[in-house]
Image 1 (tube, rainbow, N blue to C red):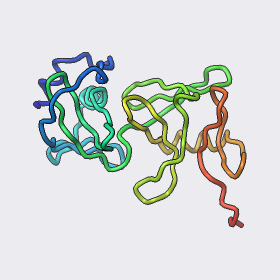
Image 2 (image 1 turned 180 degrees about the vertical axis):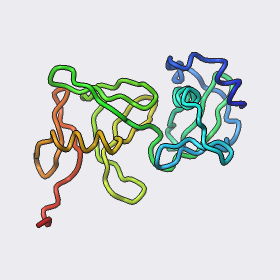
Image 3 (image 1 turned 90 degrees about the vertical axis):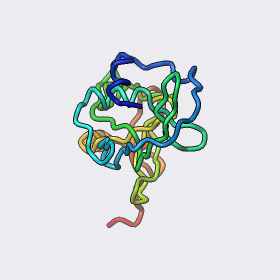
Image 4 (image 1 turned 135 degrees about the horizontal axis):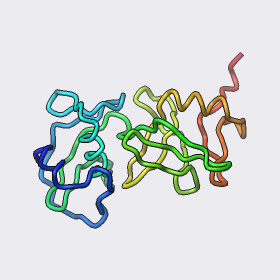
Length: 177
């Protein structure tokens, strides 16, 4: 799959109907989403943010746990070192929150999109938010600290309420001084 060809085929702002597509597996693509969120194709970082945004919209995680770029005619496996998406900001919607990904997705924190604690590359439990097509997003450090400042404690966790449900940001260490 040539990246420029893919870029020309789809509107980079819309989410294609990936759930309706079932193309054959065509192999592995030399594309890595690093633990810091950088997209690296054939050893070089992708600098065009529009291209990263487009690729993120044709990305899904399947039942085998692997990540694939999917078009109507082909499916290519890629490597994801941690989680593929990054939440960079959040807006208040009344008493609730709407998270914003680096690709421009707006995701309400609610019962369907609930922050949970998932192991990171170093084994620490870090918050992750489901976005779409089996994809989870990490919180950017700035947003994480912003939410920690607003957090409350409940049942050994710190977190916040949004969409009528609890969203965990971390566990409280009982052994801390």
